[in-house]
Image 1: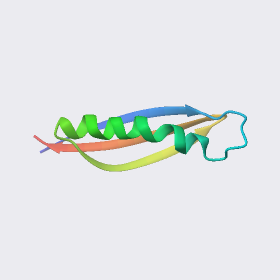
Image 2: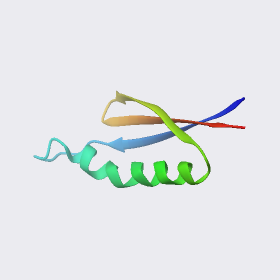
Image 3: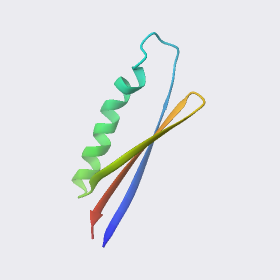
Image 4: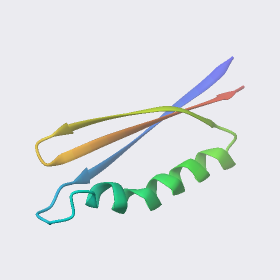
Length: 66
């Protein structure tokens, strides 16, 4: 049997000349979440992202055997 978890992260766009500012600024937090769930025995399975207005929602999906 498997146990599943979803982690949702929200990032907001800002006025800047750096078109990759969300990707650059989110790497550290996403890596922390990957490390946190790995320490609990979860495996990263996939991710999705959506945008709404000036926000980008990133969903990380994890699973582990129980």
